Length: 113
Image 1: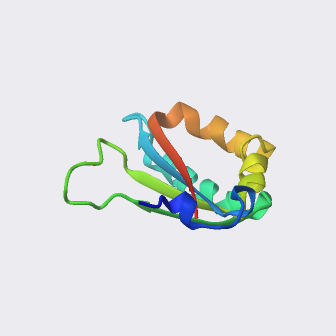
Image 2 (image 1 turned 90 degrees about the vertical axis):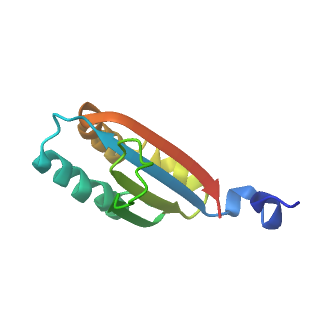
Image 3 (image 1 turned 135 degrees about the horizontal axis):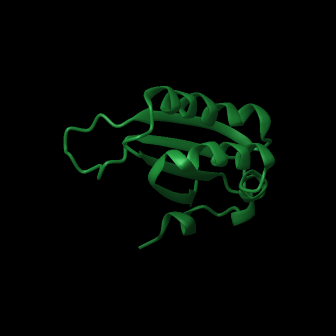
């Protein structure tokens, strides 16, 4: 069986990267604070090079398997270098400083496209 990474013949440094971030907010996080996160996360695309897109949404599954995670953000990077630029970028770090105190938990997974 061929894995998704093996089926793409381009080098891994040239592949797009999908970065999925799922958030579980603390009960104390106010609706206004959550709205601020909903607005600021997608705005990172305007200030950090190499972000191709940012999509997001609130959980609406009826299965009850979200384990308290309410928000999912999907960031697509042009390549691995773009992700490497994003993670320590001052705008991303400033956003993380606002986000962290509001979080009960976070789940992140990345994969090559």
